[in-house]
Image (cartoon, rainbow, N blue to C red):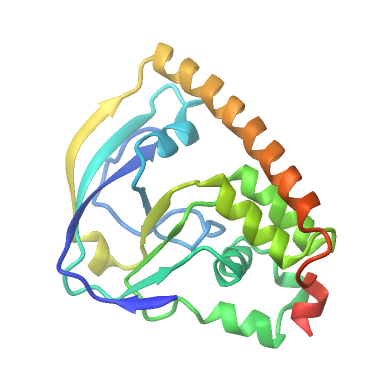
Length: 213
């Protein structure tokens, strides 16, 4: 986990179910990977798979100026997984504990978080970890193998003002159908890979209840 400042400008992608109508703002639903924010990805294909079921879906190419932003860059690993688990409501059963409080306050004060993407493939593995079926070693190895790409999440109005739309493209029905097929194939492959890795590391590492203590 790194706190960083950057003068870099990056090109990112955002998928919208019906298009961006107003000013860009940190108003996603609450239970997202890194909390409420405006989500962007480094890989154009990834946000497309999230919106392919919506007939008015649009994909945006964005220019993001990272200047003067307080940024938390979190690498893939147990901290990353637990921060996502907190934001997704997976730690509510241990609310008030030391580990809960640690992740409840981890992103406070930051304008943007950079971290790896979590999707339904990842949550199959994460749920197994919280249910005590696999160790942290199996969890981290599985997540690393899935190679989901990175996402940038603007958490504040300050960060959102640094985002400019370069291009807007509406998806055709043909495009959306192809993406649906691609998404399902990738999901099946990802789960198969994760299952093999979990078997390999079933006796290495610690279980969630051990880490919690």
